[in-house]
Length: 515
Image (tube, rainbow, N blue to C red; front, side, top):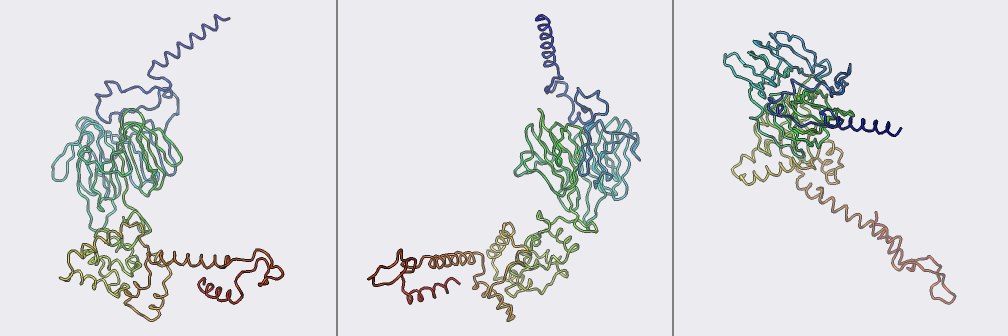
């Protein structure tokens, strides 16, 4: 019996040793082989590991997930079919409006002697090469070769052709372009390694943007690099839509309350305001190629606008500091905002004059009340005349400029709601009742500033505390016991030691001070 147990034990040990030495061990993470290191960049996108080795033969297994606000599309779920209007090319649609997105993302596998078709009218297109090479030809008959890690942004209604002699794989993003006034986009051809690294405050990953950050472009392409062990510090929730392709590496992606293992070749769609977070695992870097829709829809007609990070809390100062392009959108979208006043009675036009922004004033002409006066009784034109006066020195201009800048970045910016909810002082009520307009001196003398209010509040609290305490513990205190026969003062325990008339002279002024 003992010999049988010994034989079984030896067999189990031999099996465990064999499993530990194999590449498919329980927790094995084999190092990249020499062959892998010599293979081209992004090769795993087109040659992905379809599933863990112990699940490859499991029928019906996939990591793909589709939910209301996000989707994970893994390589084993890609379905290829001939792309319309493309020749000798197969495509796999990964993200489409059918799932709720506002863009299309697909793979295009071009074979030998293949060419692309044109997108529909008003559709912008961005192509990114992950394998092989293609030649881009435009209307001027000039051609540019796009190799792996190269990209091209093709404006809407721009004639072009992508031709492939051997084979290539492209990831393509398409979206119906939202025209914004006179803004237009241009053909852009580049490569990732030529784009500068951008600052990412509070984060450790490396970020590159492939398109200009301007109002003309309603999307951008981000390339994000994470080293093993790095992760997002911010658990992001924002209005942007995302569609991304993991080009290299592997890690864990959190989408909402779900945690997904991801690897090179996986595609993710994220709806607006879905919680997202990523951590890089493995032994190599993780690199994402992701489209970000940069415009925010704030009207029923689909008008787009980028105002400030504080959406729905637009301050007068922030509006005056906008670029002329952004201000032109505000004028078209919502004119009511432009007549709001701050705590000093200044409109956007006043602050544009104070900060010497004549271009903004020209845009606002005819859209705001030009004759509106601040609490000093001055219109924006009055302030502008002072700026243009030879007596107005450059030093004074710089001082006002810096003061306005400090107010803009200050965390104590007064919004319209805060200003309207503030109760006016007694002096302000008096001036309003008698129709006084020049309130600068009166306002300054009314101790209505934050510092003066703080001082008054502290002094008032001290006075109330002292008078209240004096009522509880009057000077002289209270008798501790009843008077004895023969004492000069006849009193009971608990009565004040002060006489009646002295107490009257004490409590009357003390009560007045309290109220």
